[in-house]
Image (cartoon, rainbow, N blue to C red; front, side, top):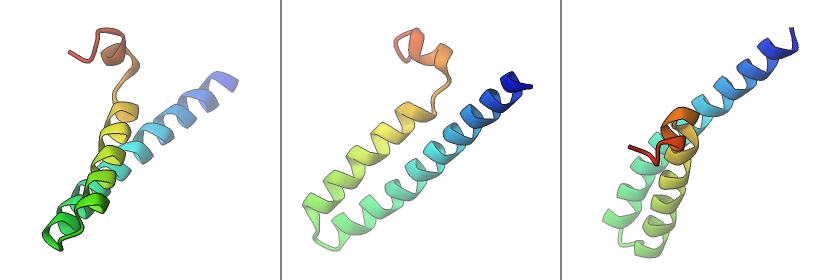
Length: 65
């Protein structure tokens, strides 16, 4: 039963990271269009990190390709 909990937690973390990536992509565009370049840049960095965390472990092990 502990394995199921761990798998569920990993799936939750992946789903959250994916959701954060989607939101920050939109927010980054909004910020840049509003003339907030630094904020847009920071949001883009958050998006990239969230996308990295949302990738399956096997994808990461292969160098992301």
